[in-house]
Amino acid sequence: MTGDQRFDAEFREQFRNLLRWRRDVRRFKPEPLPSGLLEEILELSRFAPSVGLSEPWRYVRISNPEIRAEIRKNFERANAQALSGYSGERAVRYARLKLAGLDSAPVHLAVFADHETTKGSGLGCRTMPEMREYSIVAAITTLWLAARAYGVGMGWLSILDPEEVRVVLSVPSGWHLVAYLCLGFPEQDSLVPELEEAGWEKRRAEILLLER
Amino acid sequence: MTGDQRFDAEFREQFRNLLRWRRDVRRFKPEPLPSGLLEEILELSRFAPSVGLSEPWRYVRISNPEIRAEIRKNFERANAQALSGYSGERAVRYARLKLAGLDSAPVHLAVFADHETTKGSGLGCRTMPEMREYSIVAAITTLWLAARAYGVGMGWLSILDPEEVRVVLSVPSGWHLVAYLCLGFPEQDSLVPELEEAGWEKRRAEILLLER
Image 1 (tube, each protein chain N blue to C red):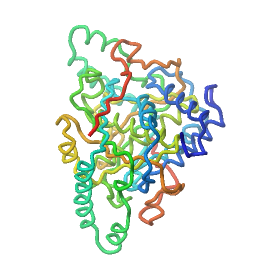
Image 2 (cartoon, rainbow over the protein chains, first blue to last red):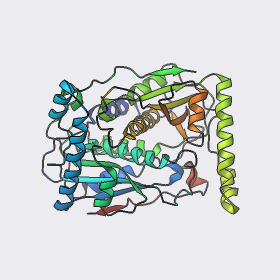
Image 3 (cartoon, chains in turn green, brown):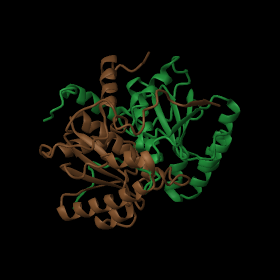
Image 4 (tube, rainbow over the protein chains, first blue to last red):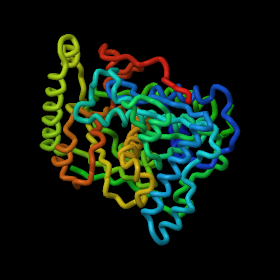
C-alpha cells in the first residue's frame, strides 16, 4: 500500500499506539524529570514544520515559586470567570473538573510565537499572519508525542489571560502566548480522554469530510 | 530513563526518523493515492488533541477542476502580491521558489476551524478562542506524520486569501480556513527542507529556552 520502505506496518501500528496514548495530563507525580530528558524531548520538537522556516517558537521554563504562584492566580481568576458562564448541571460538572496540573507538575513551560522575527523573511505570512502561531502549535504537537514516547505526560492549559502571562514572565511585547504546558510523569495512564471520563464530552467516531 | 514500557529505544529512533523525513512537499507524482489510504490517514488524525474535546476540525476534499482552478487563481494573486513585497536578490529568489504543489497533487484538502461548534461547551476557549484553530493545527500535524508513515507527502499552502477560499468552497461563514493541503506521493525524498535547499532560510541548530 505504500512505496516507502522506511516505515513498516509494525512501526505504523506502534505510531498509532503513540497517538492513542497521548493524553492531556493534569495529574502528575511530583518527581522531577531525569536530568537532560526535557532537553532531549525539546530537541525532537525542532523537526516540526514552521512557516517559511521561520522557527518562531520561544520557550520559557518557569521554576521560580513566586512566578508559579502568579500563574496559578491567573488561572484561578480565568477559571472562576469561566465557571460563571455555565449554569445548572454544566456548572456543577465544570466545577468538578481538574483542569490544570499546575500544583504537582515538575516542569512548567510557556511557549510563545515571536511575531517580530525576521527569520523566514515573512514567507507565507502575508495573507495569514496567524501562520506563526500555527507553527508553534505544530512544535507543541510534536513535543507532546515525543514526550509520550519517553513516558512523559503533558497538559496544555489555556484557561489563562495570555497577555498577563507575558507580562509576568517579562518577555518582549511581540511574543504572543500560544500555550502554557505542564510536564511530568503521569499519575495514571488511560486511553480515555479525561474530559470523556468526567462525562463532559465524548470523542466523535468519524471525521467530517465534505466533497467539492 | 523512562518508566514507559510501551515505547522502546528502537521505536523512539524510528519516530525521530519520521520527524526528520516529514517534509513540506511541493512536487508530487500525479498518480492517485490507493483507494482508502486518505481515509486511513485521516482516521489517525482523529487522535489529535482538541480544546475541550470540541474536535472543531472540518475537512473539504476538492476534486472539481473548476474549483481547483479558482483556488489556483487565488494563490497566484496572493503570490504576486507577496512577490511585490520583496526587492533585489530576495525578490529574485522568491520568484524562483516553488511554493505550491497545486498542479500535480492528486489530493487537495481544505481544513477549517468551526468556531460555532457547541461540542466541548466552550471549555478552554473563553480567554483564548484561538484554541479552536490551534486544535486544527494539532490535527494537521498529526495527519502530516501519519501520511509520511505511509509514504505520502504533504504540503501546507498559506499563500491564499482564506476568506475567498471559504466562499469558493461554499462552507458556513463560521468556518475559518486554517490550511489548504496538497497530498500525494513525493517526486523525490530529502532530509533537507526545500527552503533550505533553495537558499531561502536555514534551520536553527538549537531551541531558544529562557529560564524564569
